Length: 612
Figure (cartoon, rainbow, N blue to C red):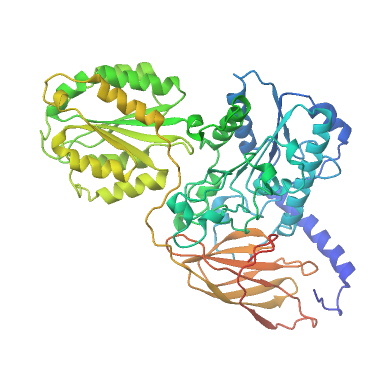
């Protein structure tokens, strides 16, 4: 790095910038932005407080800008407590840097200089880094070193304890880097949530093996998008370090999470990464860990999944007999879902000309007693459209959009009807729309109890969502009914083993950033410009994501030219896929005030991975 020599010397310049960053940090703290300060504490105090020899020691690494005991940690701790409290295992927790660090290391988890998603996603002209962007890589290294030191020392003190490691976002990267620093025999299970260094080789290419359900990585715990190849910072390759970690690592990456994945929603690009709280993944990881402890053989991951079951009943005139005859069977099925710790929702529908879909209960809104009362009193309306096609597609779409599905849970819709459906429906919803939304959510599997007359239509919806059709003409025509039909339906829901690997049938559009150039505009700023075939572009500075750009030109301010500044731009296509990126090193001119332009068009070499 060349610095001008006619102003401060490099040493004085570094001192000057440290003063500026400290001052900035003080300003940020008063503004309510994330700030992390190292607290002094001896290793002995950590040993005294956290080295209890419980059966399980659970370690957590927090996300960027989070303070200790933040909401994500609380939800993580709550999930593991819920799962382990009814077991015979004792357990305890340790959060990195809670007591000021360990082993001479402190994990600061620096923020990105902004305090909300709205500000995070603004146009980034004159962005102020708040002194945090430069510390990201050092923070991850410090966190991994702290975790490794704690694990080594704890394993010596408590050799029979099982160690579980978890982390979100930057903390997930800490976890995956820690694997490179510890002895596999000292780790029982590691779970990463939204890791920017996730690596899944089966997701590479236009039609990758994952979309054919082939060559899936053993650590792929929950990654629904089959196109996920590597995180935004490139992937650690190999991700689980060696065969000695086989079965000890689980990667969790939510749909639309651009940080750990490939595909995102350009209009709500950050939401997929921000919403790990309450999505069920922390509990899914806890269940996986517990099953590994109590089962001597590999366990089917689907057995640890919670069931989200939505009942969708056709309530037009001709359905009166069917609803009454299957009332008891539906209640038995609902009780089974509740007994297994699942959630139930209840909707009714008819024809949009007469009857809008109605939510009677959302997930976790009604108890079994509530649902029993509602279903026992459920009746068909005085008006209806008889046996004509009904608005099943519109009702299904409305239901899936409105309900709060849990990430990681098996998701099902149980339809009871005696009619076919309009395609397109009166509001324009088509069968293709319903199937696409089902897959985007996880998918949602449709199980349809109906008559033989409309079997062909039902099968289109069921097969498109990995569900199934059940026929019971006798019940529909008031000739008696077979309880086994409904019992088989519910049994199939519980036995359904969903791979969670989705191929939406989308053609993956390639996008590229080229002609990435910069111009030094002042003593602490630079103007970046580039060409891109992407709809929008992700901007990074020194491995730290700064935001998503709508333009191809931006000025970065508050740069510290006494340190290396690597700018990386990654394009996102209109359909949300990340394409070929480019990076450039901002080199300060020897002559003060000399604004020179340097061109670079480099295919992304993933930071810290040594790979293209």
